Every structure is written in structure tokens, then in C-alpha cells.
Image 1 (spheres, rainbow, N blue to C red):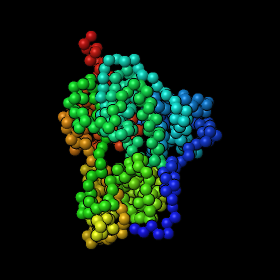
Image 2: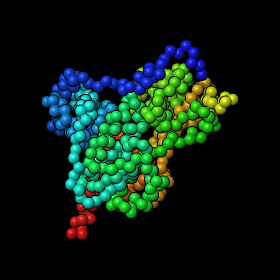
Image 3: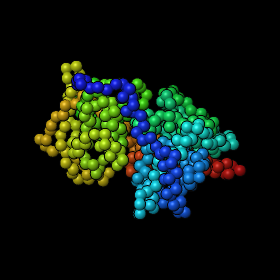
Image 4: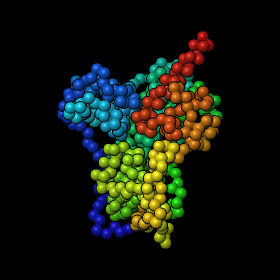
Length: 456
């Protein structure tokens, strides 16, 4: 890898991680909010997994009531500021807007961001804790699902403690989504909204290590398991141990928690996978100064799991996509650093259990690409050991739940978020995790209330 003829400063690299979109101006927000028809039976509300009253929050923007608008949003979605930036709105609320039939949909995501950004800038605290009811709930994991459960339980008067392994709460929103799409301060504000409800957050506390599952089960009236997912699994090919092979989750996290470096200047990078995390890994590489970035995916663009807007964003960044291409071996130099990757062309065969056609290697189609770095983004592994410490039924790390109550095989433990996603169960969206967190809180409240009624 050569840095010759490259003229870029650390300041330039750091600026590459500033938020891409500046958001709506005051005038743009007023004009856009006045386009809304304020439908009585608004399909955009139905299309939102958290059921935000979209016409109401937009009408409040139009009338200048920005605090009221932000409160309407955050009441329905405890991570509504983050979701304004990362939700696939064209598939959800904006996709359902009636104006699609005549002109163009209302920019609901941008208006949601406008209102919540105002609340963040003005350091608004939108909620007050409910009257204490004497019940305690432990929440394992402080990501979108865990925070949402905590917020609802705080409003309902529960004594809530979040156990979070990381240094800061927020989970995916804090560490796993690139800064130029979701700055950390947005997630931090949402965490503060939860803390304002007397919710205690114990960071740097790994359940199963710093505190046992048994201790939590013994000391709390109910438990919410919202642990998300773990690191990127192994590719299972030769050369993964080489210097220059990265886990996409850790790679993105470093760009949000450590000083930006020039290690990718002028380099050639390949990303394995085609989900949203793969897109983040690729676009981060571009912003770190990589000369060429390719995404390798063993299926076609029809099967990739990345959102359409993420795909378009990557293409605008100059990321190349190599479809029907799988890695076969990573090749290193004498110093043990990546220098190339051997790949093989694929073709789609018969559908697998998930309904997607299985990729099959094309015999004799091997080829080699010169690369300086390989980023693995082929999904995430599960915290199976922790799930088993709670003695919960699961399928390969996907916790089994009662779909109506979100209760696990232990009636005292409820689960939500990515820990219940997969194997035909749940949805892997931040906004879905938020709703599941709310649902878990309501289910706990109902279970507690029913138990009190029976005793009475």
C-alpha cells in the first residue's frame, strides 16, 4: 500500500465523518409540514412499527409547537431521534403516504428529525417518572429495545436497572451505526431521556461475568433480556488471522470511539457481505481514504439485506459491488499482512429453508484481487452462553418467546430486540426493536397487575 501522491489531512478525514445531511432549514420544515393533508385515518401511522401519530407531530411543527411535536414522537418511539435518521422511511411511513399517488410523499423522517433536533439543541427533558409502584425490573442490555422497555417501565412507576456491558448505553445506535448517519450525541440524548425517569444504568457491567444471571433473577421481580447480538462470525476460510482482517462491527465502533487514523489512505478494501453493516463498513473505508472499495456478495442484489437507501448511498460513495462472488482464501505477505483475496464465482441454485436460492460455486472460476484490508460483515453471532445461564429455551441463540406476551420459557423473563430475531421470528429493524421494548414493558405491567388482582 502506497501513500504517495495522496494529499489529505487528518482534519479532512475527520470531516468525512460529519453527518452527511444537514437536515431541514426552518423554512423547509414549515413548507413541508404545510404540505401534509393531516389524514384522519392516516396510513403512515399504521406503517410505523411504533405507531407515531405522524399527522399530529407534523401539525405541531406547522403551528410552531416544536416541544409538543418532539414529545408526540418520543412518546410513541423512545428512540425517535435516532429512527428519524436510520429508519427505512421509504418502505414504512413515507411509502404509505397518500401523496405518493399524486406528487411525492411528505418527508416524514426529515420532519421527525427537525422536531427532535430542536429538542436536543434546547436540552429538553420530555417526561417525568411515574408514581413508584414498588416493583423492580432488571433490563439486560441498554440498546434500542432495552432503552424502550426502560422508558415505558419508568413512566409506569417501576424501579428499573439497566445492565450494560459497554462503556455507554445506546447499543447499536451508540456504537454500531456510522457517525455520518447517526452521531453519538443523538443516542446519548435518548439515553438521558430514559435516565430522567429515575432509571439506573450500570455500564461496564457484563451479566454472566460481573453479575450472575441467578443474582438478577433472585433480586428483581421481572427481567427483560435485550442483549442484541455479538460479533461477526468466522468466514471459515484460510487467512482470517492475518493483520488487516476486520470485524465490521468492531471496525465501525472504532470510528465512533477512537481518533480517526490514516491507515486506509490509498488502500484497496473488500467487504464481505451485503447487509446494512457491510454498507457501513464500505462507506467508512471510503471516508478513511481508501482508493478502491468493493463489496463481495455471494448472491445478487435482489437477495441482499441492506436497505435500498443504504445501497444507493454506497454507490454514490463509489463503492463497487461484485455480485455472485464468494471469498475462498485470504493471502498474506511475509509480514503477515493481507495482500490479496482469492475468490470464486457463484450461481444461484435451489431455494434453501429461508426461501432464498442457495449460492453454488462455479467450478474453475477462481480469481484473485489485490487488497490491503478485508472487512467481514456476514451477520452476527449470538450470546448463546448468556441465554443458557438464564436457562431459556432457544434455537441457535434465537430466544423462544410467547409471541403475545414476549415471555420466555421462564415466565419471569421477557425478551425483545435482536435476541428474538431470526429463524422466522421478529424483524431486524431499530424501530421494531423499540416497539418490542414497549410491548415487553406493557406485558410485564399486565402480568404484575394480574398477579396483584388475583391476590386481592
